Image (cartoon, rainbow, N blue to C red):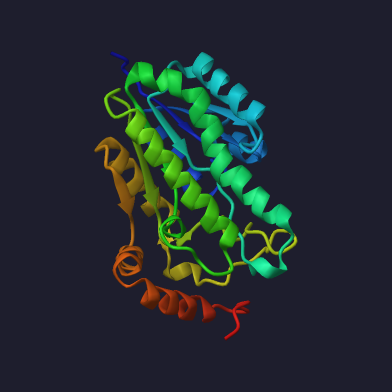
Length: 266
């Protein structure tokens, strides 16, 4: 049995991904991480012998293939894969450029599919864990975030199918759904034209920190949880949507209509 486990993390240059890498390194794991911003990764972890940093755009299949192959050469077979790379949006569907929908699906859904596909043979050998970072938007469609919700619904469907296929393989498949987290994902969320918003309408000081989120994820992975919905607001939203979907429509609309400069109109 290996003395040191190997964790692969995508989207690691900021937010939850960055917090995951830091906390896994502190506990002595070998880390392979990637992001489109390689400068940020190298600045944080370039001098750490336990960390392998790579540049990769997860929406590009060949990038994912090369990253996974390099990670295995560098750090050995994969024990944990965390599909964390993601991007958000804020725009009404009837006013967007359709490239926005494609971009969300390419990163949030296809990015996880690409990395999982190339990592799976290795993870089967270790009987490891595949974990994806999803969202409450994967359970309940959110207004002005149609592309984001669609990508997270697709992600959860993929993970559930894969979990069932691998039921007797020893591989554990799971996803976690943070609530609103103080992470960079909203600051780089894209607008109707696919450009970065550059700001968030939420009060960051009232949100769960990326470090708190990472702690919950790491514990859930270690205990091989099925799924994790992190906040009480998120859990309530999931259950109301199951039991009283019409009420959920109204509550979700009214919640997001309170956002600063919201695009919703009654």
